Image 1 (cartoon, rainbow, N blue to C red):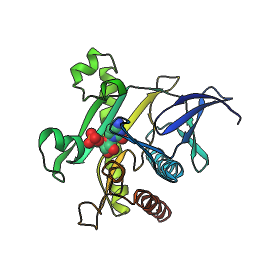
Image 2: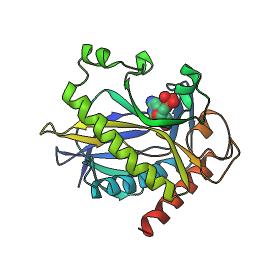
Image 3: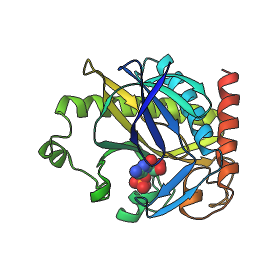
Image 4: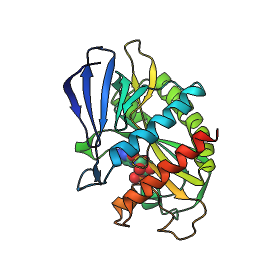
Length: 244
Ligand code: C5P
């Protein structure tokens, strides 16, 4: 496979075209950003850690029938993916209150939600990725009602699988963000990544509110030991996959 030109550079990944128009190469970067890129930094080895974790999770999801953009991972920080048109939506699934949900509603961090919730945010850096209502989503024609229903169903299915998977790693899945895209046949595929950059992951055995954090909140909140936490997540994922 020959790599052609840079198609797109995002905050965490660079996408390259390949000789096959249906296939792109995603290069995972060590760059880290938070608060809509107002905070910038780098997490050593993050590219290969996140690429490896995402690859394992996409493989597991494919095995239970969830269609993803994942093809394979030719090198530790690169993923070959099916070319999709990304829907401009950030789909957030929450099991436990934290982050913007706690900030905006006053629900204490750590409150266990009676049932998982699925939220849609407008993927738009200029506007700061605002929370959408269904009406706003339709007003902006970001997706059809059928797509929103299909995404909601998939998001909840993925959440059930991931909650279980992370539990086997001794990790509590607090919340996470998914992105979806449409392939050339208008088929909906799970895209982007699933990693400590996009999930809130708490060490289940750890009671200390800061020490339990194993995700990008360590970077956002300057908690230190960011790379160690990411490495630990990867080791636990590999162990869980092996023991499957
Ligand atoms: O900030 P907030 O609490 O809304 O984030 C919910 C979840 O979505 C967190 O796991 C966060 O890491 C993820 N997220 C993300 N990319 C964004 C916004 C949120 O991965 N642009």
